[in-house]
Image (cartoon, rainbow, N blue to C red; front, side, top):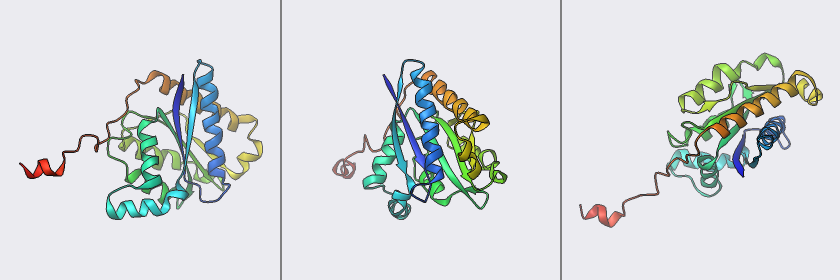
Length: 201
């Protein structure tokens, strides 16, 4: 049996350190799930590819095309891995835009692993003072271990504290995914009353 893990990367470059960290966290989650006889069915959402649809959604109130598909993947996900680069001591604007357009209860009770990247470790507190409060507000269940990666961390990704933090975070997300009931939030457009019935009163 597989569990749907959706990776949301807000990196702007291709390739990016943000995507690299996101992939490592997803792999650690998959390893942890496999140790319990399950596996991760991983889907990746690159937010830089959704920049224009996100702006359109903010103006029209309706998601279209790839953005609508991405939101549906999040709705059906058993768990999320979300990673952002740090800008102005917080998550990126593109990252915030994506979570602004989700229905208010879409993430309620959903397990989420937090990650962030920046040039130096001075920005590591973004995980606790910006990201965790955002997902708490959205009703998500964040794993205890969040992972920050400075540029220097990728040179020692295979050993030491950095690798240990990634493995720990993956185990924690897997534990939450396996322990949580599989509830898919209802799509608000599933039971829309046809317009002609509304006219009939």
